[in-house]
Image 1 (cartoon, rainbow, N blue to C red):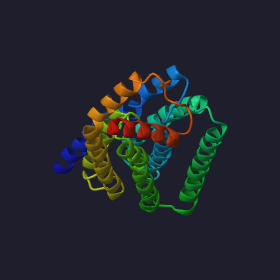
Image 2 (image 1 turned 135 degrees about the vertical axis):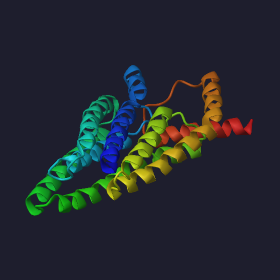
Image 3 (image 1 turned 30 degrees about the horizontal axis):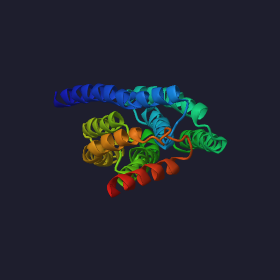
Length: 258
């Protein structure tokens, strides 16, 4: 009886997790609407979307009945995530404006596809029980899930350096924190270390992003308002991301010296 109630509660939490994860996957939509309108990726980075894609790929493999039974909710949401990330990366590829960056994105996508194909072949040919497959794929999932949650670290560094959260989307940070929290709860009913550990770490990363957003939100508004008043300001360059952060940092220094 208790087990039946636990399974029901786990399923409910999983459905809520699917809804929150869908919001996480869709949260960059305003960012990509801006990219399409400006026909430029500005200082946005493709790293979070590439990291999310490989994360979704390995979790779909993990959730297959032949690998980890009774995990269909894991498959449904990560399958949806794969489609969404492919759309976002396609838009990024079209508007990135630099051939070198396009080659990097293409190379990473090819590497991710090859990796998941090789992993699948090895798991299904060399391991013949769900316990062994769960262990092997679960470890890989842990690694890539932590990478996905840690992928905004470069953006967080730029936020601290420039005192601006302009290129750290708020709703992406909120959705990431909520997503990690709900899947951590899901992972303890019953305990699944391969889901609990990376999502627990994800909670910490998400909380750190929200703290940064709260700390630099007002300064961002001030910086953007002052920048727009500058007669010599002609808009954000579409060059390399680190160049963008240097420009914003230089402008901040000018403001501080006034």
